[in-house]
Image (cartoon, rainbow, N blue to C red; front, side, top):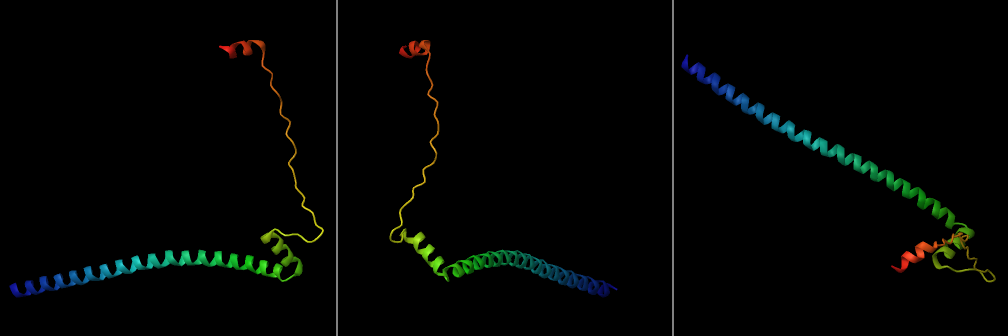
Length: 112
């Protein structure tokens, strides 16, 4: 009878150790899965940004494929003009400033 209890105790101990080991493995896998999901989201956002950049670069490349687009790019990059062209300077409209006049008593107080 005593041997039977000892065997049951040993079996329960081994089973508890096996359960603890399995739970720790599952916990580690869950952590790795969470990291993988967050990295997948980051990669998806980077992919979308690259696709947006690709479409913008494609549009720029298409514009540079025409003579007008090349001309505009050269003008923008180097600030050049064709012979006979003149520079146009756009001046913002003048703002009307109201001149404030001071009263005689403010002039007197200014002296003190």
